[in-house]
Image 1 (cartoon, rainbow, N blue to C red):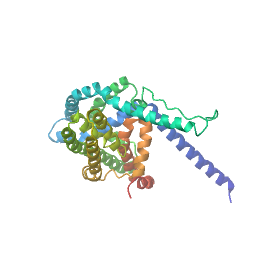
Image 2 (cartoon, rainbow, N blue to C red; image 1 turned 180 degrees about the vertical axis):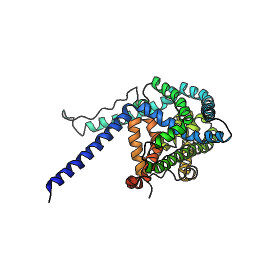
Image 3 (cartoon, helix red, strand yellow; image 1 turned 120 degrees about the vertical axis):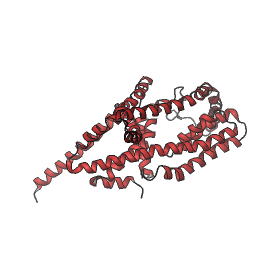
Image 4 (tube, rainbow, N blue to C red; image 1 turned 90 degrees about the horizontal axis):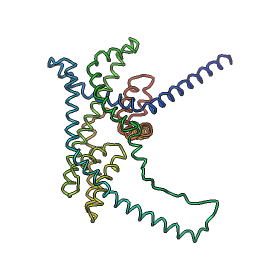
Length: 357
């Protein structure tokens, strides 16, 4: 046996593994420390994928591509403005009344703390205090980490404003220069692999469009069911809390819990009987169950074929990396990665592992 060749192959294999680990660490560090840049680019690409069919439709009507791109971006901004205009007044009123909503929760938390304090006092007579061990002290800080978590990827308010302002321009340039970007991207691959690369990019675009538009329709249908129920109960800010619950319920696994919290906070201030709380919880849970099992497969389709373990890991990773925005982008980013794996022979095993059986 030639031990020299064996040693060389082992060294080469170890060096290759080390380089891969270093490359992954560099990519993760870049995604973390330059998160605002990558979040802006990802959001702009997703929006460009969604608006691209409209630009192509205008091109068929003999509208120049730059003008069609501008019209589609302006139309998207107009829709966002109308939604923001409709929600702004109610959102301001809700924020203004927020202290009155948090007071009952603080009262409940105080009762819970008193309950555990009494338990602790009753156990001190059974278990003698020791100087070596002590019970941990829980302190409630005024500055909750949840706010910092939700904007972790964006950073400061100034960075957030700059990021939002850059997205329309990036979308416009991506749509206008689509043909040049497409050709330049394909030129990055060898000639024999360009057809496969084109197929992968087309599949990613179709998946993103179907995922985004499908989820928007699911949210609209869910809001159309939840909002009248909240209004019938007489829940304050029903026109705001209904769509908010519908949007939050789209987040996999934890969405239904997040969707229930805002209306229950308002209900704590408004109602004194149990029935409204039960109706709110049952409505959100039933609509969420129907959306996940019927509406999402029908409207989103089966392009996003990710198993539960993959979705959980993706949400944990992107949530840790980019905070609340990472939770929203985790599924489409992971589905795009799976589309790449499904169309590359060496990575098909990973694509099968990430997909549903």
